[in-house]
Length: 227
Image (cartoon, rainbow, N blue to C red; front, side):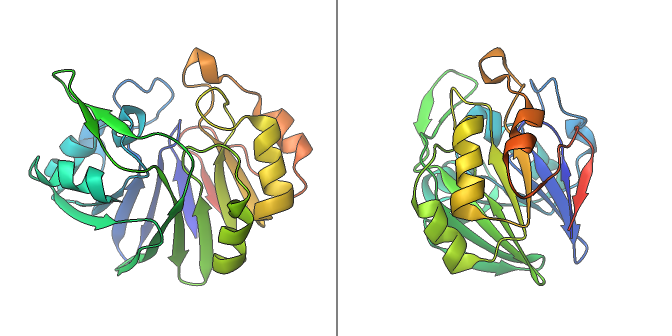
């Protein structure tokens, strides 16, 4: 399986002729390699409602007639904007053409601010377990460190690849992410995300790589990881 990183927490992959993008924050993301008008997507998966994750979902979904897979309250909000949505809650899973999506716990807040400055409650923030063919991917989403990462990994694993935030301030930082990888998740491969986009989340991915005891790939926007 191949997953491409597009800066911040934006990920994409193609499987069974389905183009899938996760948390498509493009406009305002100075690190991304993407342009909204060029994005091809059959499915958009959202971990939570913050604007740096919902990003350009509405425009991309309308441009591509894409289906948005999102937590229940966020899905409800987006459906009212005219999008095709599939709502899932913690522990919920669904099979799609490209594979299976399961939402799991993350510890983080979640709301969306519209263009008029109105703030909308969008339910819990969540992580993702993706089962694509014989591979299992854990996208932790924005989260702090919590012990049930071990339970999530044991029940759904073994984990072939994990995408985890290291930027601190709004999510776990390097040391907590290292503990999660080395002691709780124990994936075959880890990729650090959610760092350097804004001044408060500046972090050194090489420090993270030096401290984890599993294979680590540091990706530049536009680069891919294969596993």
